Image 1: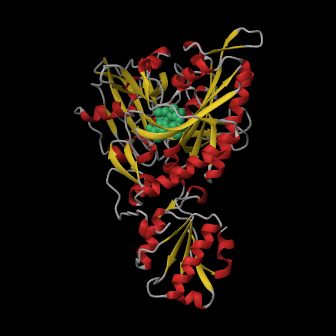
Image 2 (image 1 turned 180 degrees about the horizontal axis):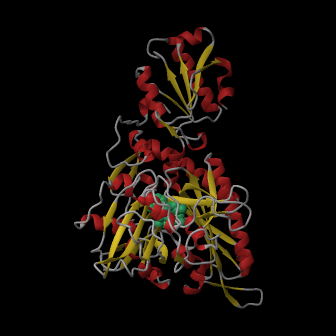
Image 3 (image 1 turned 60 degrees about the vertical axis):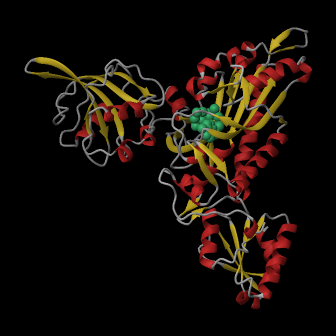
Length: 572
Ligand code: ATP
Ligand code: MG
Ligand code: MG
Ligand code: MG
């Protein structure tokens, strides 16, 4: 590729809505262009990365016995009604009507369609096992699209579906996909971790998520450094863990240490850990004022490094008996916290009646903030932003591992893949059966396996960047090598050498681009550092006279002189 004939449009500034580094850098590098909320054009440089990601996935899927097909984007509502997901999926499912008033889903995933394909095509156990996959556009009307390709509404997913005659077969197929995913993420050159996951709404019996490790990840991963234990936070919370915190309904008779901050005292009483991260705690505080018992609802924002932020949410309806479920954790305490409004130190019982999570924590807090309730000294973005809310949890570092083989550590990850053992949930509701050895119809045992193709770009960047820009792992870089000629239009020597090296690298199968745009060196280098090309070769007269080219890896602090004749070997 020649840069003068390619499309490069780098920017100095990222748009203000780009909150995280991968989104900012992808915008600045001209890899994506926003068209609407959660909807992006994949610009030429970005598309090259997507194609490389797809090629690796396709290669490993094929090696693992997957067979590619392509299912439609627009899928009749009737199929989705058969499994009940037309109603269950709620507003995330994008629905459209045709000119006759018939309803369709724009696929967020394709279990229904693949099950329909298979129920009419598979007759006998002899046709099993079978693994069908596609790489296709998905649409999910996400509540909060954000972070560029990370949580888009339109995005690309590889989804695969396995069909087996029995449970053991399905579990074997699942293992094959688990191993294929391990191979795929290893080839991307990314640090990742597979964790046990809840099955969630999709139903079924077992599941794992694959996460790219990044401190900015939305998900907390719990693992044991001295054993194989690894689970996402939701799954870990659902497991029996060594109880270090009060169970729902448990009486607390602990006394906090006077003299510590209010935050610390409340944390002590509730048995939670304070960190620099904000913990949000909803409290129903019972007070006796002039002999009269009153209750007040309070939201307390705790942060380890300073005393802060109490907000009275007394008028939020229903807080006291709200039954919370899923996602961000909230400790809802009912009881007396005497002196909560002053120093805590008196020995008084606190009963935890609910110790669980809220799905709508952000809405809840936002809502409170909106309606004439205020935080004292708190800043929404800094103190209560959603990633922080997601940090609120029951399992903390240092808890005993459920396998008894050590203590737990926590790191953050970005979910890039998900494998599920579905069992017969879909085949039963859609009557997808085959004839077994005895000629009897039996429901197909299914598994499904997703990879977020476009999300991988964002995840890779969150893990690999510096102050100059993106640092792509070579396997998925838009170009592997950029040739930067110094004064190509002035020097015949440079021109000849550039053309020769360009041809040699291409012949050696290296994905190379020549920057023949005639930019000054500074601007030229800045572009490629921002775009994140892993290898750069500078071709200048000075070096050539000594028989050398100047090589610099994207992470190298300085350039190295490499003999002209050895450059192709050096790069390969
Ligand atoms: P999340 O928890 O991030 O919402 P999910 O669990 O809903 O993801 P799955 O149904 O497991 O997603 O889909 C398989 C994969 O598709 C995910 O592991 C993720 O990599 C990708 N994916 C899901 N939603 C999006 C999205 N809105 N934008 C980009 N990729 C996505
Ligand atoms: Mg989702
Ligand atoms: Mg998920
Ligand atoms: Mg998932």
